[in-house]
Image 1: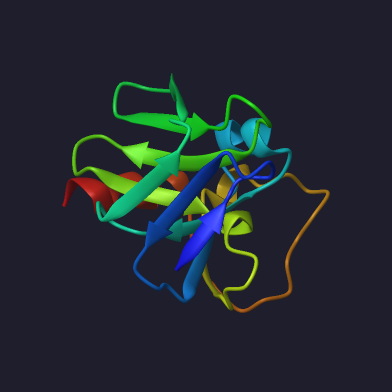
Image 2: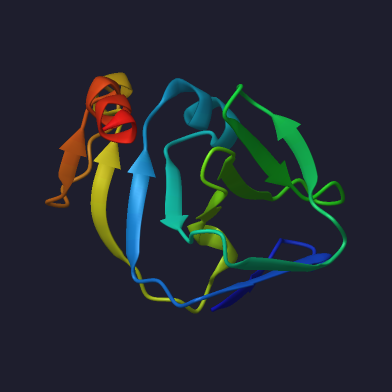
Length: 130
């Protein structure tokens, strides 16, 4: 699937994905203004055009965005080189909302009606270390 940032300066290409997850953690909400609509794409991701600007958001991850228009592009897990791209990059792709993580950090002012797998932050960290 192919996508691009708002201004088109950065294009991204990766294998087709259909599953979409939401991250309700405080960092993702601060970064995006709401939950991050996340598409797990592994390490096979190609960016063309301008290079993404990188922000090291923790010891284990970095976030990328377009320096020209500010579009949020990805969350990159460094230990396994996994890219989690933002769904908004792919305007023509059909996704299925399958899971929500850091549900314990979701603020009370919204709740989605979709039936999804819901994990707390502790459950996410337990899965990543097992």
